[in-house]
Image (cartoon, rainbow, N blue to C red):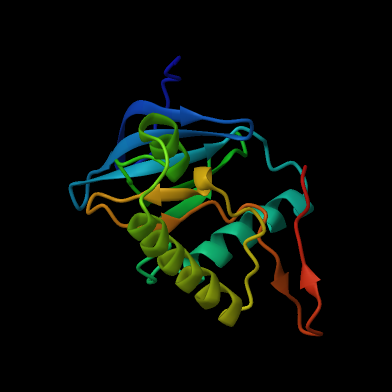
Length: 172
């Protein structure tokens, strides 16, 4: 994978971990606290107020749930000078559940149950906070450094407005 040389104050960007249709994820070191993190940089530019609102919705949805043991914590977020948004997340070195299934095959009944219970708890917490994830799949379930699973990527999340109707960002 091509490593785009970029800089973010307070972080040492080390390598590309993955690249998708809308974002690139880098391994980085958060210098102030000496921890490795995942830096997710959106490839799309926030050209309009709608784009900025969508990004803020994702950050807010994920941030509200950051303390949950089965949600990937958000440590920081912002926008680069070229209007590309970024989020700093917990580094989950175990990759995704999708990767694990691809490389090792089906889960045991116990593993499937444990993962299902953890993710169901995360979804229940999200719903209690008024957040609908809308993109739960093995690729959005990450395995943290302790072997636990955590739900990631709230990019398609919907949150209710003051009237109780869900606002969703839709795909761009």
